[in-house]
Image 1 (cartoon, helix red, strand yellow):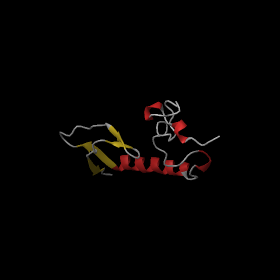
Image 2 (tube, rainbow, N blue to C red; image 1 turned 90 degrees about the horizontal axis):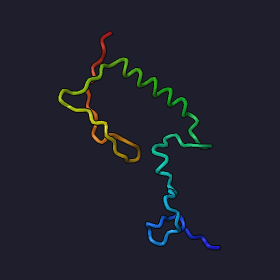
Image 3 (cartoon, rainbow, N blue to C red; image 1 turned 180 degrees about the horizontal axis):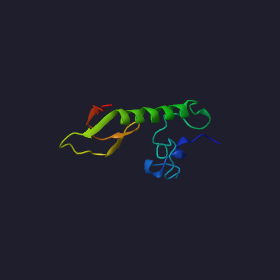
Image 4 (tube, rainbow, N blue to C red; image 1 turned 135 degrees about the vertical axis):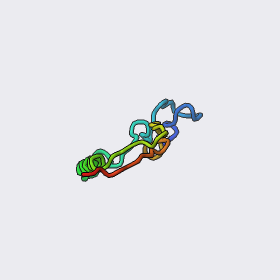
Length: 98
């Protein structure tokens, strides 16, 4: 018995062990994992999501959001550490009058 890490490589890498499509990094399934997963999940996960929902709701309630004249909104994405917009979103933000 010997440790042969190349057995996890696909056949595309030459002498792989035939584990075609096997992803040891998990990058295909998990796109974003800011709070961890499983037994080591962040204990403040639920509180953080509630706070974010409250924060975004207050932004929508307190401000009027408009696109810039002549600027098309492009919702295409690119993958970095997380998925981000390919082109930044520019908007005009005005406080709502009470």
